[in-house]
Length: 419
Image (cartoon, rainbow, N blue to C red; front, side, top):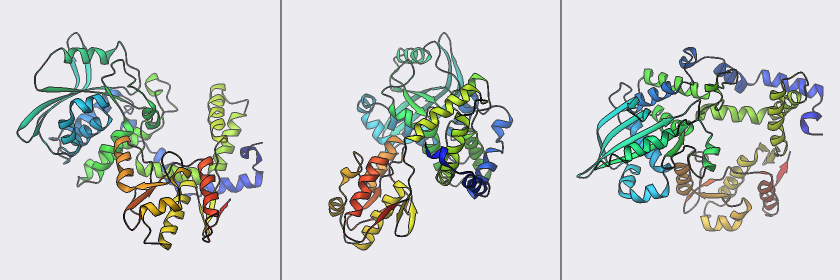
């Protein structure tokens, strides 16, 4: 019998009452039950709408007051995600783009660009990059797939057409943009389109690298409203839609604030969520495809450990526990160095990633992959005598057990209890 079956009826009633009064639940309910403008217009999953938005925010001459910031971030993202061969063959140019040591001119953007005998390009961008006294024209060919798969080898046709033009001093960059999850994107050995010269991106990267940083800049309330409406359109589930255009992923991307709310929601309501999943998966009156999908999710979750840990009178989940223990250890010995901390807490306890890393290394991983594998906020970082470190947030049942056992054997008064 699993935990979802063992919840007593009185406990279940208590959990439901707590759920209904949970501030996070109320915020999420308000968020997901309010329609954003693209939803009202029935356009939240239309490829052209997303291409138009990208064209608008990338265009420095638009009224958003972001100037060339979004274009620079977009170019940086493409460079970071390009393959090793592309990075090597364009090293000087790519390095200058990464450090933003260049100027921009002659920007041209077009959506639905028609090339006779080839097809319509979702988003077409040309821009001149000047580095010192050298100028280079970049052409970006972006295939945007929101609700359908590539058809008729479109990416190969576009690639062959532009490469066969043999234009001097023009570098073509090819992008395949889809709603694939970041974890699935990271697992890909090559882009999912027919032409493997494309760099595949997802909408979560657009959010992380372009849109959320844009919101932190000095922008008008109108620009802020537009960006936030667009972010909401990306995060709205399309589970109630039957059209094929909606079936390619329920959610396209999540903003940081929403992700944090959802994580808190999960942490506080795990038992209730698991009980709900079990009830649906075992209900013969539910539709079969619903039962099967929920059963699959429940099966995956049932093998995970949802234990909480008590340390110094406070309750933590796995990753937060590690951060607190390391922070407390350092506070009791402020002179400790990175090398000595590694002796006290061997990195192999966590596995290949290590328990902690220097801030600059952890930040580089995030910049390169788009995934935060460490706690990087200022109040999460830990200052040593010779460096600043970030603790890993990659913890499962096996390595957290090793960490707890190690801490409890330190003989320095530290004690972790499993709840």
